[in-house]
Each structure stands twice: as C-alpha cells, then as structure tokens.
Length: 249
Ligand code: ADP
Ligand code: 5GP
Image (cartoon, rainbow, N blue to C red; front, side, top):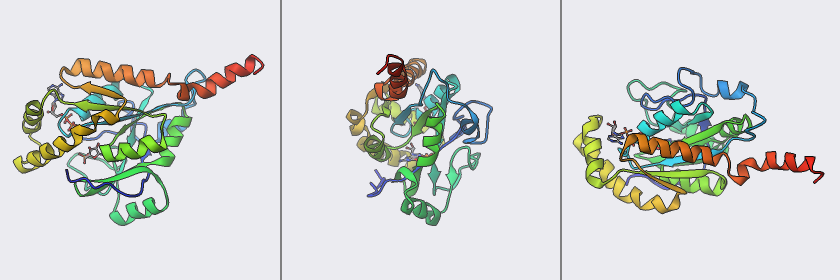
C-alpha cells in the first residue's frame, strides 16, 4: 500500500466525542473534544482507563463499527487524530480530526508530542500523547482508530493496550462494500484493494480478530473486547494495590 513506515513515533489527541466521516466518537450529542474528559472525575470503581486500538483494511466496516461501539459505551471516548489531510466535506476541526499543516505536524513530531504517527495515502496522521494520558487518568477508555503502522508503535509504547483487527468476510465482499459506498472513484477503490492485500497480513499482530460479517455480531464482539480490556491486570493494578493496602500489604 502507499503507507510509509515512519522512523519516529509521535502523538495523538483524544476527545470526548469525535466523529470521523460523520461518526460520533465519545458520547453522542456531546461535542467539544477533550472537554468532557477533562472535567469528568475518575470513577473509584473504574480506576484508570484502558486503550483499545482498532485497525482494518479500508471498506471492512471499521467506521460503521466504531460509530456503533462509541454510541453504546458511554465511558469510551474516541481519540481524535491530528492529520495533514485536508478535511472532507462535512468533517469538522476538532471533531473528526485536528487538521494541521505539514510544518506544524513535523514540529509536533520533533517535540515528541505523538504516541504514534504514520504516513497514510500521502498524508500524516498522529495520536496525541497528552490527550490520551488525560483521558486515561480521568478513568475513560480510549479508542484509537489507526492504521497498522501506528499500531506497531503503540504496542511498544503502550503494551497494556488491547488491539483488534477487523476483517471483511472475503476479498470479494470488501470490493463490493468499497464499490457500493460510492465515496471513491474506481481508481481509488483499486488502490484501497491493493493496500488491503498488504494490510490483511498483519492480523496476527493483534490481540483479537473480529470478522465483520453480520454487523450486530461484530459490534457485540467489539463491546465484549472493550469491556474485557478494562479488567486486564495492568488496567486494574492501581485499584488492586489500594485494596491490598487495606490488608496491610
Ligand atoms: P471503513 O471505515 O472500514 O472504510 P465503512 O464503515 O465506511 O468502512 O463501511 C464500508 C461500507 O460497508 C459502508 O457502505 C457500510 O455501510 C458497509 N458495511 C459495513 N459493515 C457491513 C456489514 N457487516 N455488512 C454489510 N455492509 C457493511
Ligand atoms: P481517513 O483519511 O480515511 O480518515 O483515514 C485513513 C487511514 O488513516 C485509516 O486507516 C485510519 O485508521 C488511519 N488513521 C487515522 N488516524 C490515524 C492516526 O492518528 N495514526 C495512524 N497511524 N493512522 C491513523
């Protein structure tokens, strides 16, 4: 595919809500990325939030699934990336992405502001370190919709993160979905299919695999994975230590 693996990692932004292509990240009907997560207190039960990474070949249904997942889990917020890609029709600054110049993006890389970053289809995309940290400290779970290159960086920096690879049921079905979405020219569809051939080989790098055949079942699987992530030992460590202290430990 046309993605280049960058040598240096970077950062990304998390917000209370962020739709990408109209999808709601975080709680539906709440705007202003970051605002809600900055003001919300951490639940004593929940402790620190967890990170979930989701990657998929274009057209597999990731945006559709993420939209459904965010809408159904109020404690899950979407990480709003920075990108040098120009906004698409209907996309809003700070809701879908933070749209920045390449110069600004490169300065952010140099300042070490990104957890990860990558070049995808000729544009730079990155995840803000500070915003993720704030969301986690506030007890929110954070969903990162990033490509396979970004995940390679996240797994090194945030080994406690859970990750899911979403697959379409077949190559032909992927082609059908991309064609029927009517958002891309036949040339772009071909480019995405070529990229998919390469991306699909990365599925063994992820903790979970969800085949998006029936939408309701795939959504259910993602909900279960998100909820299980909250109970990973690393994500419960602080709470466990507090309980252990009451035992005199
Ligand atoms: P991605 O974000 O992975 O590029 P989209 O969410 O835009 O993919 O989905 C691509 C197309 O496939 C859309 O038209 C969407 O409505 C459709 N789609 C998504 N999931 C399914 C599914 N389980 N069954 C059939 N069509 C689906
Ligand atoms: P789009 O431009 O269609 O919104 O996204 C193109 C690709 O970039 C998708 O595969 C999406 O997951 C990925 N992407 C979006 N944000 C980030 C990011 O912050 N980091 C990385 N590595 N990939 C991203």
